[in-house]
Amino acid sequence: MKLDPGARRRYGVVIVGSGPAGVSAAWPLVEAGLDVLMLDASDPAPLPPPPTGTIGGLRADPGQWRHRFGDDLGGSTAGADVSPKFATPLARAITAGYAPAIGLDAQRFWAAGSLSQGGLSNIWGAVAEMYDDAELAGYPVGAADLAPSYRAVMARMGIPGAPPPVLEEPGFTSPVQEVFRRRGRLRDAGGFALRPARNAILAAPQDGRQPCHQCGLCLWGCANRSIYSSAYEIPALRLRPNFTYVPDGRVLSLFDADGSQGLEVQQHGAVLRLTADRVVLAAGTIATTALVLGRLGLEETPVRLLTNPVGAIAFVMPGLIGQRLPGRSFSLGQLSYTVPIEGAADHAAGILYGADTLPCGVIADRLPLSRPVALRAARALMPALILATCYVPGRYSRNFLRLSGGRVVIRGERTTEADRAVRSSARAVVRQLRRLGAYAVPGSLTLSLPGSDAHYAGTLPMGQAGPAACGSDGALNGCPGITVADGAALSALPARHCTLTIMANADRIARGLAARQRALAS
Image 1 (cartoon, rainbow, N blue to C red):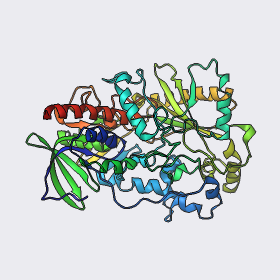
Image 2 (cartoon, one colour):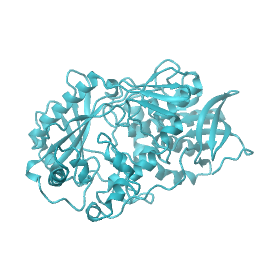
Image 3 (cartoon, rainbow, N blue to C red):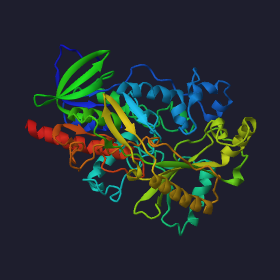
Image 4 (cartoon, rainbow, N blue to C red):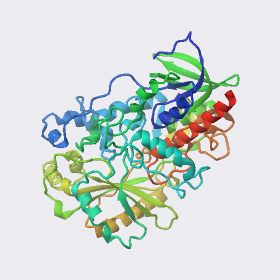
C-alpha cells in the first residue's frame, strides 16, 4: 500500500515495525476494534528462497556453495567470529541496508538489524524462554502479569504448552542424545540444570505452515515455514478491516503535533507527515531508541544498551568420532541449561547444538591444521561434536548508544567482569558435561564481540525515572502518546533468550492500551 498525501492523515494507533514485538502489539489492538496502521520499513523485493530437500541432499549437491556463499560469493567474507547463519544469502539479504538506513556507527560492537518484513525473526534461533519472578526482579511486573500474554503469544506461534501441539523434543543429534540419556548422573550438579530446549517450531500444520520434518536445513531458512517468523502473521492481520499495513514506510522522526503524535515517514523516496492519537514503537531496540532520543531532543545523551555477553565452546563425544553423517537432522537448539555464576546471585544460561548440519568448512576454519587435513578432520569430528553457547545477564555488559550529528553511535566494551563471568560459567558447564561423557575441545572457548548475541534491550527501561524510560504500561515518560513495546522497554536482561518475553510484554502493553482507549471512547 502507498500512503496517499491527499488522504486522511490522522490515525488512531500507528505501530512502527513488523517484527515480533510489532505483531504482538497489533493483535490485541486490532481485536479490540481499534484503527491500527502498521508502518514497516520493509523492502518489497523477494528474499532468496531457502533450499529444499534434506541436509544429506545438500551435501551431495555440487552447487551447494550457492546456498552457503551466494552467487556473488558474498558469504565467503564473513569473519570467523560471526555466527554462520549471518553469512548465508538469506541472512545477508535480510540485514542488507540496515546500517546506512539508520545512520549506524558501531564501535567495538556488532550490531544486527533488518528492514525486511518480520525483521530478524526471519533468521532467529527460535529459542523461546519464559522468565520467572527471579529473572523479572527489577521489573514493574512479575511472571503472573505476563502469564496471560505468554499463553496468547505461544498459541499464535505454536510453542509447547499451548495448542496446537508442537515438537517438544526434537530428534536430538547423536552426541546430544547421549548427553541427555546420561543426565541421571547429575544428582549433585551444583545448581546445573539441563532440559530440552523450547523452540518456536511447529509439529502440526498451522495457518498454512507445515510441521518440522527435521530436514537439517534450518541454517539456510525453512522452506516449510516451520520456524516461526512474525512475517507469517501479517497476512492474517491484513484480513481485518481495521488493520492497514504499509511496507516501505520508514519512520524518520517523531514530533509533537499540537497534542497529537507526529511522524515523518519516507515512502518510495517521498517524505510525508502523519499524525496519530498513539504511536507504538516496535522497530527494534536500536531504531526505537534512536527515534525516542530524537523526539526528546537528547542529542549526545548516551543511554545504556544491554546485551548478553556470550561465549561458545565445543565438546566431543569420543566414541562417535568418524561415524557417518545423517541424511536428516535438527540444527536448532536441542538442550538448554542454566548454571550459577561463581560469586554472584544470578545464573548463566546456554543452549547445546549438534554440529552435523554445519558446513564442513566452518569446523575446519577453527582447526590449527592445513586446509586439506582440517577438512578431513572436521568431517570425522562433526558427528561427535556438541556446540554450546554460554550467556550471562545484561548487567555485565557495558555498551552505550547516543545520537550524534544525526547518526546512531553505539560504543561497546568487553569488560573484565563479563569475561570472568563467562569463563567461570563455561568451566562449570565443562565439569558437568564431562560427567556425561562430553569433553571440551582444548582452546575452543571463544568470547564474542559485544552485540553478537543480537539480544539488544533496556535502553528505555520500564519502571525507571527520567526522560529516557517508560512506565509499566510502556508509555514514554513525559510523552504518554508514545508507547515503547519492544526490547528497549525491558527493565533488565537475564541470561536466557529474551524474544518470547519481548513478545509477551508487547502483548501485555497493547492489552492495557486497548482497554484505556476503549474507556476513553465510551
